[in-house]
Every structure is written in structure tokens, then in C-alpha cells.
Amino acid sequence: MNDGQYWTDRPDVASRPTEVGLLLPDVNLTLATDRGVFSADRVDRGTRYLLLDGPDLPTGPVDLMDLGCGYGPIACTMASRRPDAHVWAVDVNERARGLCRANAAAAGLANVEVVAPDDVPDDVRLAAIWSNPPIRIGKPALHDLLATWLDRLAPGGTAHLVVQRHLGADSLARWLDDRGWATERRSSRKGFRLLDVAARVGPPVEAATEEDAVGGATTANGEDST
Image 1: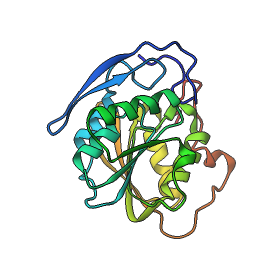
Image 2 (image 1 turned 135 degrees about the vertical axis):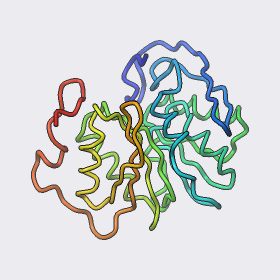
Image 3 (image 1 turned 120 degrees about the vertical axis):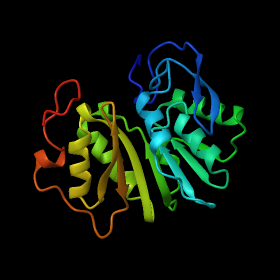
Image 4 (image 1 turned 135 degrees about the horizontal axis):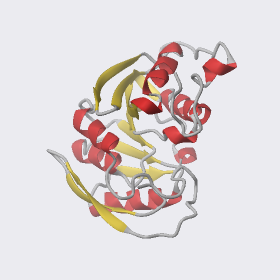
């Protein structure tokens, strides 16, 4: 279970360190985790789905990003699979960043750089973004977050997002597509969608209405009402 609001800068729950395993066909890691971070008790099913069924990563000395890195299962996997790449592990949560940094170091992954969002240099352009995005921050904040980073994709770059269907995966896909980030559903499994999002070509597309700008109505627990 999650405890505390993992999307805050400094979780207000007491620390209780533990470890979780991440076993994939090509990666075997033991990751330090703690209360106050996302999916502290196990690697989230959506994250595992993205790591197992996501596309091949770009090759070469490119910049990759794990957006909302938590304690680092995605960032560490990306770095393991692409040792020539520079992996930006980005999170607002200070505790999560410390864990991700420690996990990358323990795994000998010197190509992971763990930073707060404002610390990514302005000139960095990303060949790929992988993310299990923080849906529960609410749609307006989520849309602002995605818009900021999707426009940091290099020409031809792609983002790959895993989103629960009942938390608005389909309405998010429509919102992205309508604003110029061509979005396709890669696959679906056990209530999750994998979305492939292409770098936007041309100027930003403005929302037609305020309601459209937030992608439709949202219930109190963050579920999509459409």
C-alpha cells in the first residue's frame, strides 16, 4: 500500500525502510524503498507491465527520462538496458530521489542522474520518456506535467506511459492526441493501458474550452467519469 502523498516534496510520514525485488528477464535488482513513496511495498503492477511490454529503448549516447521515478525501478532498468545512455530520473519527492540515487549506486549504474524537475538543464532533449505518471495529482496538474516534458522530446522521440483504464487512460490518450502528441494504444492488460506518444510536430494546440482542457470530469478519488 501507499502511505502519505508520494507526489509531495517531503512526505510527512515517518521513515520505515525496506527492500523490494525487481526480477525481469534481463534485470535482477534489489531496491531500497520506504514509506511516503509510490508503491513502497512492491514494484507496482503497471510499472512491471511497462518494463516487460514497453518498446526497445533508443540506442547510443542519448538522453532518456523516467518521469516520476520514485525509488527507481524504471530508471534503473533503463540504465541497465542502455549503459551508453544518460538516464534522467526525475521526481518532486525528496525521499524518492534519495532512494533512487542509492539504488542506482548500489547497482553500479553510473549513467543515472537523479534530479528534481527544475534541475534538468533547459537544453536537454529526450529520445524517450518512460513513465507511470502520478494520476492522482488530478487532471489539470497531470496535464501540465506531461505538457512540460513531452515538449522536451527530441524530433522523432517518443514517450511511453502506463495508465490504469479506470483512472482515465482513454481520456488522457484523447487529450494528448487532440493537442498534437499523436498517441496510440500499444497494448492493454489487467486494467492497464500502455500508451505510445510521439513528439509533437508544430505549435501547441490550445484547449477549446476549460472543461476540455482538463479532459472531462473526474470523481473525488481521481477516477474518470466518462
